[in-house]
Length: 268
Image 1 (cartoon, rainbow, N blue to C red):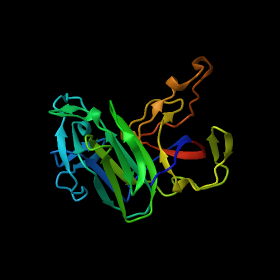
Image 2: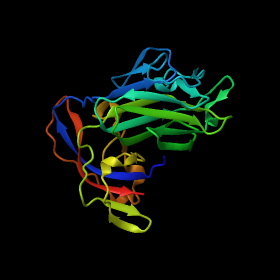
Image 3: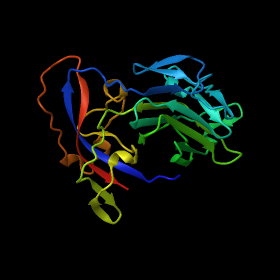
Image 4: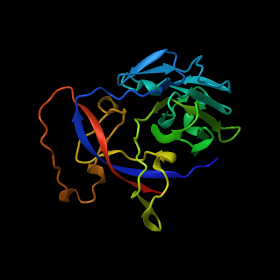
C-alpha cells in the first residue's frame, strides 16, 4: 500500500520550563546487530536485537564495522543485514501518533558493502522508503498514526541480489495533541497555496529539515523529544539582511527547552 508523504514546516517558539523530560508510553530503542546488551546514547538506553522478541525469523545476520574509531557513534558500529523480507514487531500500549527513526550508516565488512544495499521499508503495510540506499550516514524520521496494538516495520531487499540493513531503530509515542487537526493549515503545492482539509494526524509526515531559527545547534541531549536542530545560517538567502533577536530570559538552572506550536505549513 502506497502513501502520500507531506513535508511540513512547523513554526515554533521556545519556552523555558522547570520540568522533567517527556516520558513516552511506548519507547523502543534498538541497537541493531550489537553484541552489547545495552548502550547509553544521550542518556537513553538502546538494547541489542540479538535474540530479541522484536525481530522476525527472516534471513538476517549482524555485521560489525571493522574500521570504527574511538570517536565514532556507537550506534553505527554494527548493523542488522537482511537478505530476505524481515521485520521488527513492537507492541503498542498507546495508540496515536508515533515517531519512527531509522538510522542508516553504511560500511564494508568482509564480502558485504552496505552502500550497495537497495531496499523498501514499510510500517504496518504503508511504504516509508522505496528502493532506498545510502552512501553516507542518514537518519530518516517519520511521524505516523498507529491505530493498532502492534507496529510492524518490514525491510525487503529490492531484488534477490540486493540486501537491506539498518543500524538502529527508535519507535516512541509522541506527546498528546502533538499535531492539532484544525482548519486554516496552508498546503503548498506546485499549483499554488490552498487549505489542507484532511486531518494532519492521519498523514505520514517525514522530517526533511529541522532548523533552530536565530539560535545555535540543539542536540538530542537537550531536547525533550531527542531531536537535533541545526542553525539557520546556511539557509539564509541574504545573510546581511538578517538579525538575531533574543528575548530577555532570567538566569536559571536546570532548564528544559520545550517547543510550543504556531500554525502549520505543509508542502507536497
